[in-house]
Each structure stands twice: as structure tokens, then as C-alpha cells.
Amino acid sequence: MAYFPRLGNYMLRFLERMRPSSQVPAVRRQAAAVNAPDLARDRFFLLELPDAGLAHFTLCGDYGEGGTDWSALAARDPRLEAFLLAPGRTYSLCVPAVPGSGYRGRILAARLHQHLLQQLSRDPFRQCELRRLLCYSPDSRSGITEKGFILWDPHDCLEIQRALQGLLFACETPRPQMGMFKADHSGLLWQRLWELPGVVGDKGGTFRVVPTEEPPLHPLVPELPITVVFPNLEETRKVFEECIPFIPEAKEILNLVDKCPKNLQKGRFPVIVIEGLDATGKTTVTEKVSKALRAVFLKSPPPCVSQWRKIFDDEPTIIRRAYYSLGNYIMASEIAKQSTQAPVIIDRYWHSTAAYAIATEISGLPHHLPPAHHSVYQWPQDLLRPDIVLLLTVNPEERIHRILGRGMHKTKEEIELENNELFREKVEISYQRMENPSCHTVDANPNRKVVIATVLNIIRKHCASL
Ligand SMILES: Nc1ncnc2c1ncn2[C@@H]1O[C@H](COP(=O)(O)OP(=O)(O)O)[C@@H](O)[C@H]1O
Ligand SMILES: Nc1ccn([C@H]2C[C@H](O)[C@@H](COP(=O)(O)OP(=O)(O)O)O2)c(=O)n1
Image (cartoon, rainbow, N blue to C red):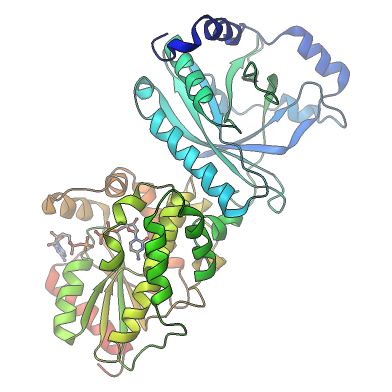
């Protein structure tokens, strides 16, 4: 018992009980046939497959009541089976929602999810493959989503099972729910939920994994405005207030927000935003263009909050995105002030906050992103608007060439961007769907001189005073 010496024999006996039998017990299947099993209609799951496709399934309770959709029970999805029944052992882990507690519950669940992610990225789990799992209600109005993982251990080590047990025991209630997948003698896929001894309310059981159709909208889309793309300052503020007990810097940032004047007005000079993925040339362009236009150059997040950036970058997305969002509101008061004196050029603003948040949150392929004109692509009503936003785009090879040429320390997100062409595509599509103001796309592949001339040309055409 390398991991949990205190649990001793008790744990060993428990683990022994949890090792699955080679077949789903016949009595269960018989009971299912007699008692007319019901699909667990309130819990659907979404699994991100290795090719970034999404597979959806639900669980069929073996003692359910009500109408039985036998055709659905017989349904099979070869992609799901290939992944969940790969040689070795596949586990599922889902962080339960904290019911009825608003942002507080979401933040607690997000922190537990982040904690599990950190643990599952360490030894002994390094030998395993980890994928995103989402539990959702098929009725998007009624349900709160729960995030989790699928963990594939290609070697089916007892050490991994023990370590997972330890993770569960170490979590406070409500504990994550764990299960593992198994084929019966006819190759049908089942999930067996783990039952924790001594924990009231933890139900085990074996359930048929039934593939379901992809819903018209990615299940996370309806809740984006309360999870990562907050529609206004008041909502963002609420998230940060809940963070104060465990991140004291949240209070300092809220104090800065409170010092900003209300009902900001832009000055008479134009406000220009330069957007784009990392290494598309934003810094190069903003520096040269601000010189040419004698403009004030601003970078977001602003210096008064960027000292805490690392702290918030390490937090779950709900907190991280609230940090960048508040940074924009603080930035707005500087824009209002400076634009009374001179043109203002800004390296990133709201469009970065929204585009990165959407692309990170929505798993799968570009067609899973929220459809064009969705509310998450709209500029917040209470945030000072720029006059023009330019989006620099370069092809993936050129961008990687520039990143390598720069040779600087790369952030986790930059590495992900390099490795993950799909993520890059999703950020860029999200940028291009932004509205009021939308982005003017600039081909930034040519040499610096050409790109700067193009940018100046667009700005001068758009802003008559320049
Ligand atoms: N048009 C261009 N052609 C070639 N290299 C460029 C061009 N624009 C910028 N670079 C180089 O690419 C790298 C990334 O540019 P940078 O302005 O820092 O991008 P960002 O601010 O978008 O991350 C830098 O080394 C920069 O000198
Ligand atoms: N206003 C802003 C600015 C940055 N962000 C986020 C979006 C990405 O996660 C990172 C990118 O910032 P980073 O400083 O790495 O980008 P550049 O180096 O300027 O290309 O910050 C944001 O959400 N809102």
C-alpha cells in the first residue's frame, strides 16, 4: 500500500471487491429484461475522442421503471467501444455539481476538477491517457453540467486503482463519482460505478452504456455566459467576490475596479485594438503603428493587475476568465482618459478574453462552437467600445516559425496552441464571429513593412480624424 498506508487491509478488501468480474452478472441482465429498464434520461455524457470528435451516451439503469426503448439499448457506437474497451482498463470520474449555490458551487466544483486534473497528470497516472468527460442534462434549461475525465490505463495496474481510490477518499463530499467500463460476453459496453464503503449515499451499480445522438448545440454553450464569457461587470464581480476567501488578490483587484469611474465616455481620439493569436505580430504592429500615429500604446491586462496574472492563470477557467474580464474593465478607464489626449492603440482587449474562453471551453471540432450571432460574440453593453479592431492572421507554419524565432519562454496555452491546430482554428473562428464591433481581418503573413502599411491604411480609412 504505497499510497495509503493508513487504510491497510480495509482498503485491500475493498479493492478486491471492486475488481470487475469478467462478465456483467446474468441476474442483472435478467432483471433488466423483466423490470423494463429505463434510460437515465436526466444524465447524458459527452466524451472527447482522440480525433477531437465527440461521442455522446447515456446510462441505462438496470432496475428502472417506465417505457423501454429496446432499439436504443441495442445501439452501439464503434468509436465509443474502441476507446472505452481498449486493452487495459478505462475509468470515468465526474465532479458532482454543488446544487443551488450559484457561482460559489461552480467555483468549488471547478477547483475540485482542477485539483483532480493536477493529480491525474502526476505519477503514477503519467502512464495513462486522460480525456475530457462532461455530464449534462439533455434538457439544457434544467440541468447544470458536471465535468470529469476518462482515464485509460493501458496496463490495468492495481497501483492505478489504488491511487484512484486514494484520490476519492481524500476528496471532501460530495465526492467525485467513479466508474469503470467493461464488455459483457456479447461485446456490449457496460459501466460499473464504484461504491465507497462507509459513505452514505454512494450508490454503486452496473449500467448499460447507450450511445445517443449529438444534440444540436454543444451542451456547454448555453452556460458559457455564466461560466467563462461573462456578459457584464456585475456578473464578473460576483465570481470574484466568491474567490476572496481563498485568493486574497481577488479583493485587491475588486478594489481597483471600484476606483474606476462609472459611465465612461471615450475621448475625441480614435481607439484601435490589435488582436490575434500569439506571434501573429501584434507587438510589432502596435509599436510601429503607435509611433506613426503618435498614439498612446496600452497592453491588456493592464500593469496594475498583471502582477497577479500567474496566480489567476493557474486557477480554473471560471476564475481565470473573470480575471481577464475585470482587467478589461480596469483598462477601459485608462482608455477613456488617454483618448481625450491622443489616439490609443491596444494590444488585446475584450475579443481576446471572449475568443480564448470560448475556444478553450468548447471541446470538439470547430462546428461545435456557438453558432454565429450567439450572445457570447456580442460586446458587453457596459464596456467601453473601441472604434476599430484589427485581427492579424498568419498561416500555422509561419506562426510556429515566428514563435521558434522568438525563442522566449512559452506559456502552457502557447504550447497548446502550437501543438493543437484545432484550438488555433477555434480561437480564430471565434474572433471572426465577434460583433459590435467585429474584427477587420488583416493578412499578416507578408513582411513587417507590408503588414504595417496595410494596418495603417485600414485605420486611416476607418478613422477620418487620422
Ligand atoms: N511581418 C512579419 N514578418 C516576419 N516576422 C515577424 C513579422 N511580424 C513580427 N515578426 C516576428 O515574429 C515574432 C512574433 O511577433 P510579435 O510582434 O512578438 O507577436 P505577438 O505580439 O502577436 O505575440 C517576433 O520575433 C517578430 O519580430
Ligand atoms: N484582454 C485579454 C488579454 C489576454 N487574455 C488572455 C488570452 C490568452 O489566454 C492569453 C494570451 O495573452 P499573451 O500575453 O500570452 O499573448 P501575447 O503574448 O500578447 O500574444 O491571455 C485575455 O483573455 N484577455
